[in-house]
Image (cartoon, rainbow, N blue to C red; front, side, top):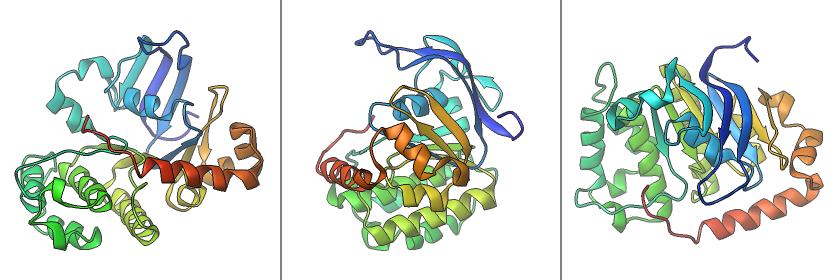
Length: 264
């Protein structure tokens, strides 16, 4: 897959969490394309781990990860790492003293945009429907409002790449479509890449250029979304009849939406 521009390259990467014996990846070589890239697969197949490796939040046990040509091990300093790639963790939650509006201004002022866009905060507040919570602190808003605010922070930060692990699970359906449509246009206009994992095939099909399809055997298929997200490929990866997947993923999202998680 070297015939398209890539942002992240993994070469011979192996990774095992200290508390486990079985490796998540063994000798994985993969070039991750530029653009809007979705990660699809069952829980436990390595989606979150790949995002963490590709964003220099984890270092491989062996092998090499390059982010925009830089070895990920060289990006140990947080500010330098965030210049390259920012990360939205799954089910993210944190408390603040400052209201969301002030935080948006702070993030934009101290981010990495080449030029400041004074109208960007207003645009994001409108598109993400945050006007009513700009004067509230993060612990005073709903889970969906907080998730939309975090997406706004990530765009205001101005990193070259944004990694999003389940960024829209708590949103209402209309908000999911609105947010993903805006992210698609924003990424294309600004020339940035957005990698996101979701559990809804329709979202992946509609709003991604490329798909990473994770199978239960830890193999990964990469290619244009319309070629990868076929019924046959999905059934092979999930090892479940296609008709059963919607019910399974609905139950997963329902359970996930009731969990609370701290900021990483």
